[in-house]
Amino acid sequence: MTGQAPAIILGIETSCDETAAAIVTRDESGRGRIRSNVVRSQIDEHAAFGGVVPELAARAHVEWLDHIIAQAMDEAGICLDDIDAVAATAGPGLIGGVLVGLTTAKALTASLGKTLIAVNHLEGHALTARLTDGVEFPYLMLLVSGGHSQFVLVRGVGHYERWGGTIDDALGEAFDKVAKLLSLGHPGGPAVEQAAKVGDARRFKFPRPLLREARLDFSFSGLKTAVRLQAEAIAPLTDKDVADIAASFQAAVTEIVATRSRQALERFRTDLPEAMPQLVVAGGVAANRKIAAALAEVAEEMGAKLVVPPIALCTDNGAMVAWAGAERLALGAADGFEVVARPRWPLDSPDMKVGGDAA
Ligand code: KG4
Ligand code: ZN
Image (tube, rainbow, N blue to C red; front, side):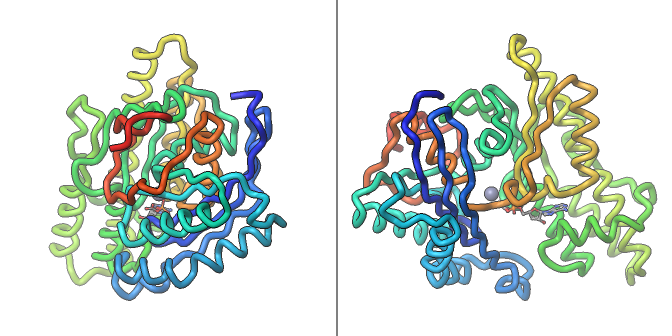
């Protein structure tokens, strides 16, 4: 989009265990710039429970959000009067947390007379590569985080086609559960990757669920069970056993993700023969070096451009919400106070289109 008025957006993200706020600007040529991006992770609060506790998360968002917003404004050198709009995640996510962020955005926009933009968290992930790398539509997004694992064809702002997803656990969740059963701590992804470094990835042949089927879906729960049964069978586990299980698990999921991504890029080439194939990765699992390397290989083999934004922007943050808000604002979007927080909100719902019907 070109020729739009420049805009300054405050973005608020509270849908899971990060309290985040950011200031992003968008110039008339459509380029975005992150002026500040403050993220407070609640990992320590939830660590003892081995996962995110929704009530604790909501309470921490209430306690911290005002400070995080103030810090974001401060670091950007911008005051509330300067901003054009407040964009907040309105779902999907843990409903208590989403309510905290969305209600704060409503209060701010009401008192300041600014525009409110309700952002779908997944759209934030989907559009980040345009902020960081100026990627043009269309492209394929692979989102692999603690809560989501899906392929989405991104045709334009608000125009998304879901090509596949997980039928049970998300990939990050599978890493977290495997880490838990190997007593590696939370969050599990980095811990499993670390343990796997010294492990033998060929010692255990774990299943690759669904992989023989053509559909672009994932299933990780059977794999996780296979890992548990294997661990029980050889318990008590030595450090070497833990490393070998971690490495064998990581090898299985890497093969699954690489194979599915190859199939998704094949579909991209068939369905959009005029377009340059592009694969954009989002979500915390993008930090995994083995998976990232496998995706780079697949992209090269398929003649596709691979875009992996900096990891701090692959994980949950306020800049992605601000940027999605900026892209929507440029198309004339504005939400009313009746907009509600939603635990579920698929990217391909009809109300994602700018000016579309509210659900
Ligand atoms: O995107 P994210 O920060 O939060 C949401 O879930 O929205 O993703 C966090 C997930 C966790 O499940 C974490 O274990 C996983 O990403 N993760 C990793 C790695 N770093 C983070 N998984 C595998 N390898 C990693 N290095
Ligand atoms: Zn996320």
